[in-house]
Image (cartoon, rainbow, N blue to C red):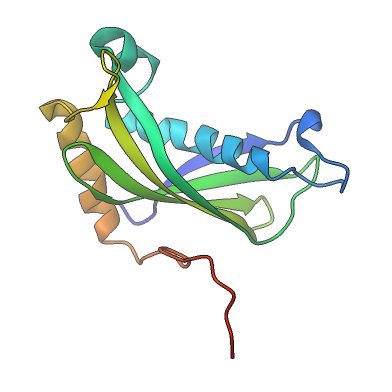
Length: 157
């Protein structure tokens, strides 16, 4: 795999535009969530998985960086890098690219595998963990994305 997982096309909905005439900050999370859907499906997660197993994924933490504004009519695509994982969770990094090629935002998250009977964090079953491991192994050969692990701070000189 020479590239991260790539969602091909994401659209901005009219109700997502705020009084500043650009995408409201809340909807970047929606775009990242939609952009992760295909990658999650490849790992074996999704509506079918929930129905069959009563297990799913929850976001434990998500950190956004807003780099360049987008507006109504702009088309975007989302990357998905699987950075790390263990039996119960995985660490991912995403980028939102404008159709013209520039980077609009990044999102970094920690996703938890959850048994809905609790609900409680639970180990992934072996077939799912194998798919997660395969994606992580493929993505480990890619260059680390810029901004991975960034922290909020006021940088002083």
